[in-house]
Amino acid sequence: MSANVDLNNRPDYDQVLQDIADYVLTYTITSPEALDTARNCLMDTLGCGLLALRFPECTKHLGPIVEGTVVPYGARVLGTSYRLDPVKAAWDIGCIVRWLDYNDTWLAAEWGHPSDNLGGILAVADHLSQKRVANGDAPLTMRAVLDAMIMAHEIQGVMALENSFNRVGLDHVLLVKVASTAVCAKLMGANREQLLSALSHAFVDGQALRTYRHAPNAGSRKSWAAGDASSRGVRLADIALRGEMGIPGVLTAPQWGFYDVLFSHTNKDLALKPEGQRQFSLSQPYGTYVMENVLFKISFPAEFHAQTACEAAVTLHPQVKDRLHDIEKIVITTHESAIRIISKQGKLANAADRDHCIQYMTAVPLAFGNLIAEQYEDDFHAAHPIIDQLRDKMVVVENPRYTREYLEADKRSIANAIEVFFTDGTRTGQVEVEYPIGHRRRRAEGIPLLEDKFKANLATRFVGQRCAQIFALCKDQAALEAMPVNRFVDLLVI
Image (tube, rainbow, N blue to C red; front, side, top):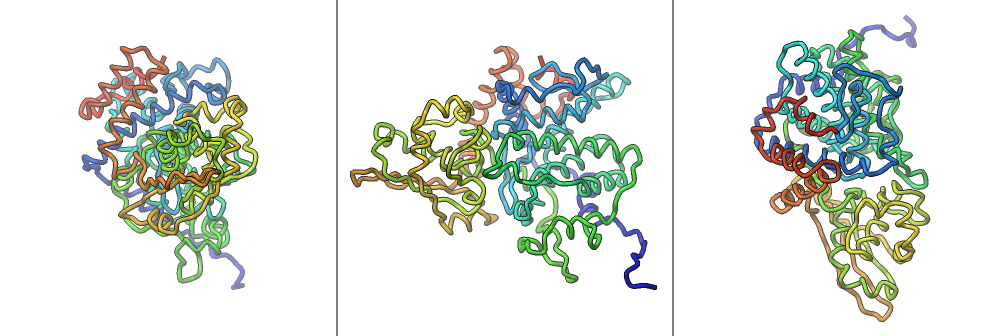
């Protein structure tokens, strides 16, 4: 037989896919900490979505593709009156959740926002619950939503621990698609073969490039990319449940598989198989680790690598607010990941460009004492030239310890330090913040503020009585877990 003839021996599903499927189908969540954190995560994620509805650049994307479409038992988009098919509803929910860059974060070799998966989870659970009630069956409860959130966080987060997709130019929303595919397929009743099929299609899809997150092409696609990925997970789960065959060797197939096509041989962050093929490095089994350690964005709607820089800048504001024009230099000491993805000089083209610029996110709270979503908009930027004047005086340097402890499992710090130097030779002294208020190490301090953030976001969309009703329910773990999903969503639409 010729050596260049492919042997048509169909393989078993790649082990990575089997491990995800078995986790989703067989793992029982018992961790009180994970469930409590998931409840807080749900509150925060819903609130971020409601707040985004104030921004027309976001809301222009929402609603049915064909105006006037009627969808029986359609999934609802929180904060609106839209009732859509679950795929488009997942897109819309995911879009509003991510629009302001204010929901949770996971930082490792890859970064991302695991609560992005709520787009698919809530859309599917709401649709299925309504349909079950109509058929005389019991609806899904919010405990199923919390379980799905924990599992989606775990899949996305564990895969991100030691695998850097960004270093080969792929966007982290790939992991949203994979996680959403897995948990949505389970919610929809997939068996093991169907779930494996769906996962294989998630990897065989073309994957998003990170181009839209980086200068000079940063733009608003980064605000809806995760919603797009989560909705794709719903679509792939539906395809698999209709009986579509899978692609068992999607990762490992020589020449044609994900590893050979999309994971460059120069990616030294990846494990090397004996035969020379890069593969995922998965350092721990799936459980509840990621939800228990997830990072909340509590104080600022800003890319997470800059959260502690913003906090340090707010601390320095009283010392510099009356001396802004006397500043000679501002030194930002940070970690390698922040330098790689959010350090920018030159003109910033749009709001999405600004909320991924550490210099901008430091200049605003230095000058104004806070950083809110409206301060990224064109009109605010144009009205305050001091922001770019301060940016021009900034020097960004790496502290190797910050870089090292960012990746250490027992620390996972996201450290930044700011020091301001004046033309008369005086200086503020360095203000260092190693762990943001949303970090697990600061949970006791952070959760009351997260609850305040949720209440404020609820008030942007609902009357006081409804706000109080929703908040009281979300504060009560047992009551929330027992609530039928369709009744929960009833409270969140208009």
